[in-house]
Image (cartoon, rainbow, N blue to C red; front, side, top):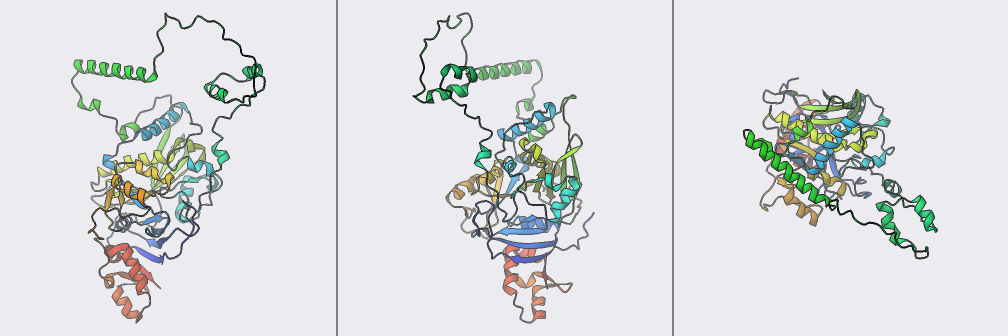
Length: 486
């Protein structure tokens, strides 16, 4: 579907004066955000909005009131072309591969990010209500009761409370302490001498006493066998042997500079599975319904711009659906839904890694499409800090709307939950509202600048509201987006 160039974004502005419950810190009325309903949205307008701190959830587009809300939410983007998977990311990719080959599922493991945390919340989620969420559920072909939602920016939506974790549930994965019998001989029969039990024995009650027996004489260490060595020494020796074999091989063959480079993300993902692998994982991508209008461009990606479902099929069964927006400068992650039976596979992080690789693929077709947006980074909420692990990444300054490297932002956020991230004290908003009269409105099915609308209304009382809206979206968007006026 090609863009005709005559499409308009149409929104209704709702303001943001009332506070409501925060899903992160549980403050009853500490969460503040501006909101507007998007009847239609061009991909360029949405790109410009998210670069000013806005974010969509279905057709609702919102922007946190950063200096007022209890948990400030900073837009975060990853430089996809320069991304290198961390040790944690490599473990996740290897975990997926191991599951596909051998069918081994980790037990009791959680991801440091949004994976795993949601595992305790099964049954707490409210039904999927937004039109976009219903679309995902229908496309996935899964009952809503079986879906587990995991938006990149908030697992529970705006203002929805996160159910508290039960300490009892959290401790189920721990080893239960065995009951200590008053008879040491009986204890020896029922308690195997494991490292766990050996650590407990010195802590036994002094009242539990029994006859002390001298240890039986033995032959001691076998002098014919080599002494035990530390694991780190063995690993070091194996590395040295591997390096020696590599050098010996290079002496016999032509040098290959790339052989000493670490594997990149695509190489990890593209690792071939053996023919006898237990499971097969497939990926399908479909254009889906959303307020974003599907567009194509001569210098854009082949799939075009708009909202898409990335479906994850395991042995012919759909297990997860990711919702992404492909925009002129980025791939923006919106939501991920996955079957709760596969929570231990860290599908949230795995899908993010695949989406970064997908962004790099699209960049080859559209050079300016080189960023991966993860939604909001919330430093005051520890479980949302995992997004900062996808580096190199930037945070958006809430005052200048300039991007700053996250490494420079963390010290400021450690001092204050809200901070101006730009280091230049003289910098300001380059796209600040300068002329309200040029903002476009839609009144009685007619597109007109605000100046003409104000003359028609003869003393309109909504000037402050329109000016507030225009200052939030910026001069450029105010002149392109149609603000609906009744």
